[in-house]
Length: 300
Ligand SMILES: Cc1cc2nc3c(=O)[nH]c(=O)nc-3n(C[C@H](O)[C@H](O)[C@H](O)COP(=O)(O)OP(=O)(O)OC[C@H]3O[C@@H](n4cnc5c(N)ncnc54)[C@H](O)[C@@H]3O)c2cc1C
Image 1 (cartoon, rainbow, N blue to C red):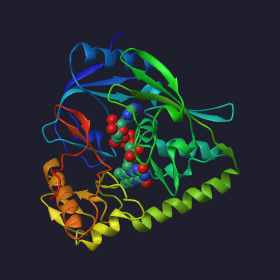
Image 2: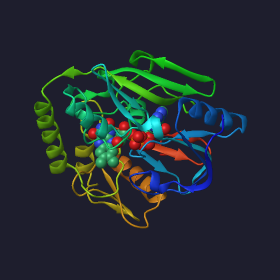
Image 3: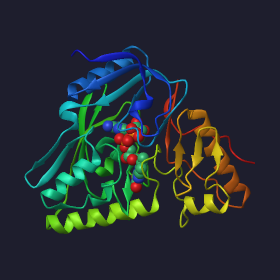
């Protein structure tokens, strides 16, 4: 099957924080077959693969990526209400899926209204908010690999707090949700409440990638960072948000290295103040290794 490939593509516009270098190749896949063909092409070419959704939890290296970036479009970004359930392509916008469900009186996805990623990214990250997470509502997902595609249930994906067991060669190409029936107006009311809470507590209209660190058990990373004096701290073009210390905001000219230096500084300060070693929630696109944890040397 032919695949659509572009070369030397800037990746910053594919992310919400808008930093990072060029990808050697980008494949836009519009069907299960194209996803599989793209992954197989990368495997034959001995190139690492990284699938990018809305890039809302992703920091891309200033040196870009010496591999194949895959993006999902066309049918793989569509949202369908069928037989009282919701079917989404892996590239579908999660907030749009939430709205579509609400309009059809399907409840349970409301927590995703302000999570600005794709359905595939939400599965891969087990995204969540307001004490709900994706694994609570996932019915099944279609996973494409270089060999083909298969359908899995939530128990097959090792979904935990902001974690799944998916590897780079496993692309969430579609997902279906089991949702409850409720009055559309009641659902819209809950969406309004969640959105209002976000506006009151998180930075708005700025370039961020959401929470920098996961919350340690029983604690809030935002509170720990604030107590360690990180709120408003600036390195280069990156600063810990004055609104919520667990968000990093990028200003024009910000580099990924500024963001990494600030992540390290925040982590070191919390640890030096007697707190835990915070674990990053954000993923990092390394030029050679692909998607990984941001490189943070350990303290002490
Ligand atoms: C303002 C703001 C608020 C946020 N609030 C929340 C929140 O409340 N809760 C929360 O959990 N997150 C939150 N986030 C983080 C982010 O939106 C979620 O992690 C989201 O699920 C990431 O989806 P994405 O499509 O942007 O993934 P990306 O950032 O593009 O990628 C993230 C990871 O998912 C993988 N991935 C993406 N698509 C696929 C796919 N189709 N198949 C397999 N793997 C894939 C990538 O390879 C990468 O490892 C927030 C982010 C922002 C900017």
